[in-house]
Length: 101
Image (tube, rainbow, N blue to C red):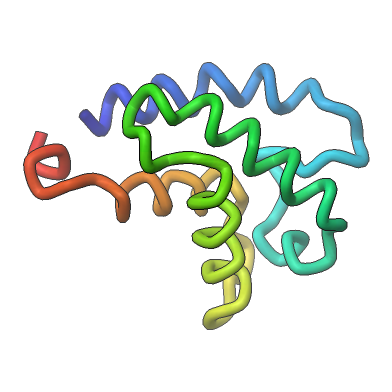
């Protein structure tokens, strides 16, 4: 399951990474999230929701907005990239049977 998530993440990095400079990308630091506009946050979360909703229906736009808000505003995200935060959000959402695969 982890291999599938990694492959899926790396495959969308190319698509997400080619987005305009104003958009949040997987390479941006989590610290950029609080400074991003609402439109940028919704756009990024929508892209993640579309990419991961096939993995689990609960991984939708609203889930990613909530998870990334919590990740960015709790503790010190340091140099963590949004890619790593998205991986953490996906892992947290995995049920017990999915996490063991």
